[in-house]
Length: 132
Image (cartoon, rainbow, N blue to C red):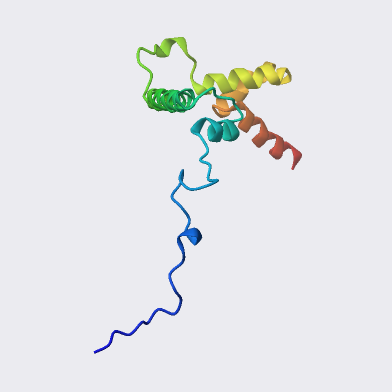
């Protein structure tokens, strides 16, 4: 039995093949320093310096990311050793803020405070009642 050639085209000549990177006439491989210089906009004297810059950047980013994670975790934890006697309650803060922003209601403070803990809401309620 005779072997039949089923290839439609002949195999390319050696000249038509693309040589591996760094081999062949006229082929030029870009150096790491050149590629990174172009990408980063910074000149590097040699490949070792360019690689060191990239490694240092990765190291710095990794450390900064870890510090950020730690800060976020710490911020989400309740504060330790907080003396509640050094702070005012929300209710006291709302009252103080209201009367400092609306001094015309200071003479009526005792009456307003009897109707609710948020003077702003009390005044709004009575203002709506009076206007009707």
